[in-house]
Image (cartoon, rainbow, N blue to C red; front, side, top):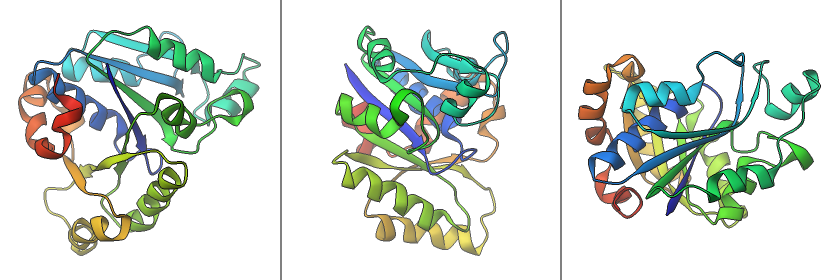
Length: 228
C-alpha cells in the first residue's frame, strides 16, 4: 500500500479537487484507491463533506472520515467549542492502517501545520509517522511563492519527502502574476509542479472529470506513486 498525503498552502486552494484528480488518475491506471480525511470541519453530521465531493467526482468507493466538527475552524478549536473529544494521532494512523487499497490519499484540513487534535498534532506529524510523501496544493496568484516555499521548507525541516506541487485552480486566462508564478515556483521552492487543475473542475460531472483528470497531472513525475 502506498500512502500519499495531500496538504495545502492554506484553506480554499483546491485540495479536495486535487485529491479527486489524483484518485481518478490512479484508478485509470488500475490502482485501487481509498481516501482518508482525518478531520472535517464546517459541516453538520448529516451534511456531505469533502469526501462526498470526491466520491461524486470519481466514484471512489472507500472513504474514511476520522472526526467531524460543526464549526469551520481549525479542528482542535472546533472540537473545544463543541465540547467534543479531540482527534488523536493514533486514531488517524489506525484508520489508515486497516485499509488495503493500492493507494491511500490522506487529505488534510487547511494548511500543513493546522492543529488537528490532542497534543497539537498536525498533518506533518501524520506524514512523518507514516513516512509518506506529501503533495502540496497551492494557489496560482500573488502570494503563492511565499506560501509554497514556507510549506516545502517545513517538510524539508521535518525530513518528510515532497512529491511536488499541484496548482489547485489554474485559470483559463492567467494574468501576469499567474504566468510568472508558474515559471518561478520550481526555482523558489525547489520542487516540481506535478499538476494544474483547471478552474471550475470541481463542477464537472463524473464522466468529464474522470476522463480529463489524467491530463492535468505530470504522469512521469507521479508514476511511482499512482501506479499499482
